[in-house]
Length: 539
Image (cartoon, rainbow, N blue to C red):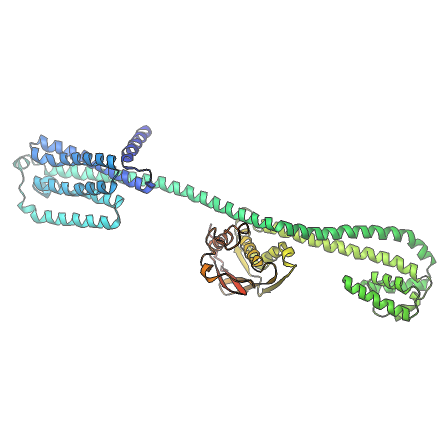
């Protein structure tokens, strides 16, 4: 059974190939095959009816179905030689529609012929399959007109005497209805088979397209991440450098303290130690100072110490600043005027340096961890498998801004206007690519010197995110094209023209919208995403 079907399909393919041209589409090739199969089926019926009528002595009448088979064969031969499918199609539909009516008329009408015109319905089935809808409707009107005309002339038609004697009417009805029904069924099965093949091919192409789109998104994401590498490396080097420097300072301070502290403590009086504890307590509560603030404080303290006649005012001032500084000198003057003040303060300053450098290490480690976390969040923000998850857009924006910190801190005025954290359900690895594209485009637009504002706001059924930059703007003539694939206004090598196109696809998959308004000095990209519980993303 399977081998027989295979041979049948192979025969159909070979027959259909007589009309094919190299430039024909798959749809056109299927039209060729459908017409040829129909023509062969009706030709077989023509041979059967020609033989039956000839055996009944109706030789002239039998020429009509035989003639159909002959004209069909000639039409297919011309089609094979010329590849003129429109002409062959018209001829085939015309003879398939006209000759059954003509055969019915010469046999005496509806009853004697067994409603022979029912074969003309195959012409309509074919017209729907390989003609335009307009042409198919015109063939239908012709069919209806011929049917009405047949009914009008039927009472006056002459039935051949041999038909009256033999009574072929009931047999003709049975043959016509069963044969045409079987032919229509067979054509339908073939059509459904071709449809299944086409659907399978379409599904495979859609899956391939989806994989290509995902690869394109990932490629664009990696390209954006590559542009961030230099900045991220610099951002990581800064805290790592601070950690290395602080570790060196701690080692030096420990060495000096371990060497000097026992002798200093042995020589100190109880009053000296009380004074030291007071200084340490006041310094511990002091705020962290910048280098400029430390220099200013050291200068002020040195002047005040000299006015109070404190010995070694410069070194004492330096030690006090290392300890965190003090507000009022008066409570500490007894200790500061003591002969043991300088070694005591030096030892305590070394210990304070340990505390300060430990804080620097903690701050630097936190900064490095934040950058690493931002990279991890950028690469894998959602659940495994890419399923939609709930997350705050404000957090995702901060992740992107952390990665761009090196480009931003130079000369960009960054303004965050987050009226709401804006929690939404979505695939946030994809959405992060959108935020990256928009921030990166804004930075390039202002050439890393200017103002960028990020706005987040919640409305009843959606959230709005706007990225606003103070760049030169997008010319009105090209605003309608910026979301087209591969279209870019940037210089060669600065952009692929895919960022905004991919961003729009991602937003549309999340049932949102993205648009732009631009004029010189102000460009606004606005993204709207749904917040309703049922706003699942489309796969």
